[in-house]
Length: 479
Image 1 (spheres, one colour):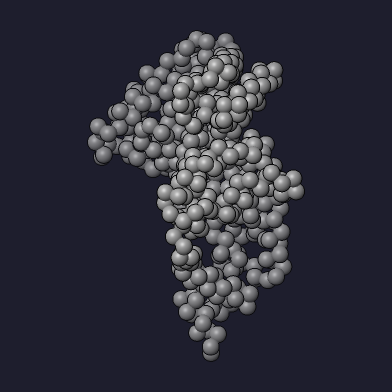
Image 2: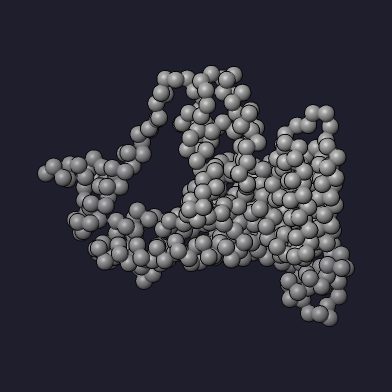
């Protein structure tokens, strides 16, 4: 009698008559875990009056007690470097954060921790890898010369990746520390040489390196129901759990290879839970592959699915805020019905763009991204966005279709871009410019038709505009 009472308190109901013992136990434990999550744990103040760590806000920063004394302590510590890690001007770190910051200086710990790329490297790494190796070496050598000149001047340089992404690479901007009495000649010469080398890289590429990158947060759908047996007609047994656990382990092991193949970095991969950072050029393909490879627990009865959130953020954007955006996008995908991809475009200028799409729409989004990369202008898209707010909300689908068709007449194709667009849309080689242009218009109009079938009304038009803006930004990679 006691066990069912506890069970009812933990789950809000009675055990099902046909439920296995393992299923009943799992639901009770899940209820206990949910109750534990409702209890907040705080690290108490030790009573000495130290301020909190700027990274781990529950723990106290190192150094003396008192605001002024602590500030003086950290001002003196600023600039301490064990390459590539350093203490910045605004760092106020606890013991744990300090150990994490500099643990790579120990050879044995370095082997365990591996290398974590900075966000600037995630954004621009693939772009730089496509450049001439000799040009890459010249840029690295120029940055090393700048580092030496700044070290002689008692300063520390911005990282190589941040210098690569800076359009204002001047003697005054190559370090976050200010100058008193002017910039030394050696530093000025080294900074100018680095700027010239960077300019040569950009000229050779024909474009600047992307400043934005993607954060993918993926999570399996209904995992609790799968483990409790609610998603399958098979009995929940140890064998069923072992099979599921084995497939999730295999998936977790495969994720880093999938992400690395797309030029990204896996933060963690644990069972049905994935967090990864990727360059914009490959982020959609990476997310699609992660979903495609998600394990099936009982394909004969019900498919196991996963939802994901994708945040597109600037490399200087607060990483914690970027992670929140990715997880909020994942939550939006689940709220919209699960087995979807939520996208959050967080620009440094302009309003954010949020959209939830089904996984089969990723192919269309990739196609549009490739068309923009092939030379399709996005002017028509922004003209269409200006039109949308003025439309009556009760317009029928035929009227909206006519409006979109009229707007797409603005699409014009530059002659030098025609060959690449012809290849993307598989237009015959003998086709003239008008045929290529019409093929582009037809393709975009077809995407709008598919949005009408999914949502209808002005919502379809609004989503087409967001769809296009995201695709254009994925190609451009900068404001």
